[in-house]
Amino acid sequence: MKTATHAPVYFLMVDDREENLVALEALLRRDGLVLLPARSGPEGLELLLRHDVALALIDVQMPEMDGFELAELMRGMERTRRVPIIFLTAGGADQARRFRGYETGAVDFLNKPLEPDVLRGKADVFFELARQRDELKSALAENSRLLEQTRRHARALKEADRLKDEFLAVLAHELRNPLAAVSNAVQVWKRSDRAEHQQWARRVVENQIKTFSRLIDDLLDVSRVNHGKIRIQRRPLDPGPILDGAVAAVAPLIEERRHELTVERLHGEALVDVDPVRIEQVVANLLTNAAKYSDDGSKVRLVSRIEAGRLAISVQDQGIGIAPEQLPRMFDLFAQGDDSLSQSEGGLGIGLTLVKSLVELHGGAIEARSEGAGRGSTFTVRLPLAAAVADAVPEPAVGADVFHRLRALVVDDNADTALGLSRLLQFHGFDVATARDGPAAIALARERPPDVALLDVGMPGMDGFEVARAIRREPACRNVRLIAVTGYGRDEDRARARAAGFDEHLTKPVDPDLLLASLREARPRAEGEELPGLDSNQERQDQNLL
Image (cartoon, rainbow, N blue to C red):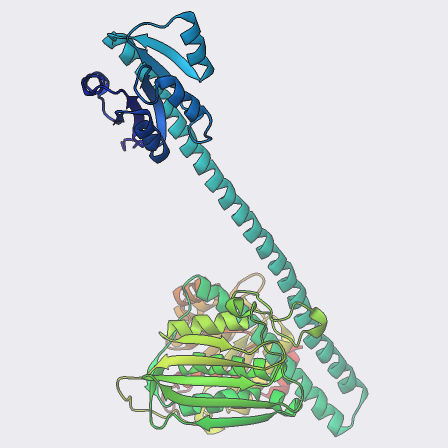
């Protein structure tokens, strides 16, 4: 058990005779007590001004300044007027002297020669009072500290609550915008047969689906980063293609806003050891912000160069800029450069938080600079260079001939989803069968063993996990590549999918490129293998779905 520590307690002893001071010190000595001897009144005053004295033991009869005069001076100063005084007198004290002493603040008179037990008893009282006073002061100081800490936490919670409310308002705004665009496009699609209207509507729907996916991915990524669950796959590579990918991703927005984008690759042949998907996400996010928060027709500059042994990627714009007081919190979660929703250009206020987290996962850093509101801004990402060069293995192109011998089974209780996914696979050469529920999927897999099966997880009755386990138990389906296609994208969901026998876990809406990359791993049937099958005529499959 830890013993409490106390500050020392100070007693002042004032007597013009040295032997009296020595005797007092011998009588009063104890742990935690510091005795301050003084041979005169002025010397005693000096000690009183230097120390926080708990008791003053003052001889009455002293040359130059007697004990009463010293006591009167003590009562005249704020620092010393509350110090208790015990007068020590050799000749006793008549009523008049006692009255004067009590007027100056004395608490007692002791006659010389002193009674040791009486002196110690009175000194102990003041010693303990001083200790209690110190403990009370410490408790009050601790209470004050806790109170201030509580107030700070309350202010932080209030601010967090305000930011949460603003974030939810922005989220609702961001979700309604693409919904409205999709709704309008669908109405045009239904009411017009003109080819240009149909193409426009299709383009709008495709773009807004990407917007939805981006919003959801940003939310999930921030959650994963906060819980330390995000994974990056690093390899040494040329940053050039990463920049190209980011530029291509924001090209529609740049074109729509009529910006002039300048790309300067000044990094030479330097390589970086990064996850290309994540760093492309970082650069695309910065370019998107630059495009959104700049007036139409502005200049945006993307530059990569080597600085102090690191790759520096800068995105500079001529946009709304950043006020000095906002710079320190630009990367805080939900922080918005402008609180006005009427001036919002889109985004949830989490993009820069995610960018900072992704950059730091790579051992890099990011900084924001601006000369103030309306004067543009520059965001610079710095990443460590790669120590070695990795041989790049180009991925094979995907075409219908890659999959022309493969059978696919698509299982989803949503008819539109199943139909769209099956047609996408047929475009790439798959022979596709479809099912709307678990029992039907198992029956199809038994009659017509697939090479790959894409299973929705959240189906009523028999869910995708049960279906996956049942298909794996079929002797002819043990080598089938099982892909979970689901709206659940947490790490727990991926782990559960692996435990159920899935080879891959893709979240809706499925990125076609990711899907096709996963399908390359499907193992085709042996040459000449004949398996009982169903009629895979597209019209029959469409009817089954509808």
